[in-house]
Image 1 (tube, rainbow, N blue to C red):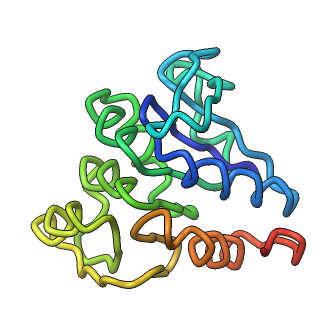
Image 2: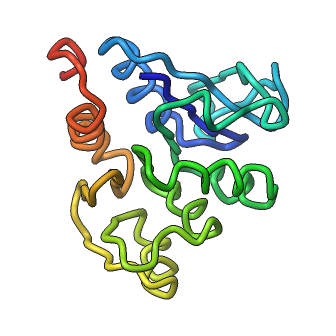
Amino acid sequence: MKIACVVGPGFEDSELRVPYDRFRAAGHEVTLIGPKRGDRLDGKRGREQVSADMGIAEARPGDFDALFIPGGYSPDKLRADRRFIDFVRAFRDRPILAICHGPQLLISAEMVRDRTLTSWKTVQIDLRNAGADVRDQDVVVDGNLVTSRGPSDVDAFVRESLALLGGGAEAHP
């Protein structure tokens, strides 16, 4: 599958790197979509640096099968840009994989009402206020939506994401 990964500055290092590497190991193509093609984006812990493969202005949702939203500060920054919200909204009926603060983009895209999700603890109240059923557990799967709380849950997040996407055993730790 072709996976769009929306990412901005201050992403949570492990929440991008670990799923990215495991999705690719399972045979999926992952495209990093940032504010502008070639933007150098630094993880909030300073361990990871990535460059955007594509800018949001050139990204077309129809070119992708699934959406991946890593957490950290990135989702809050991206949701200030209407183009990212519109891009995310286009995945309503396709696989969406969001970890930690990733659901902030889903809230802004008005995609959480009557859905069951989890997220970082400070985002959970925002999800409830937006009409979501929030669970405080390592991973929650609700149809096409996989969510996790944070870095300590990344293995469960990848496991359930690959179960939804389809992926080889080599992608599991």
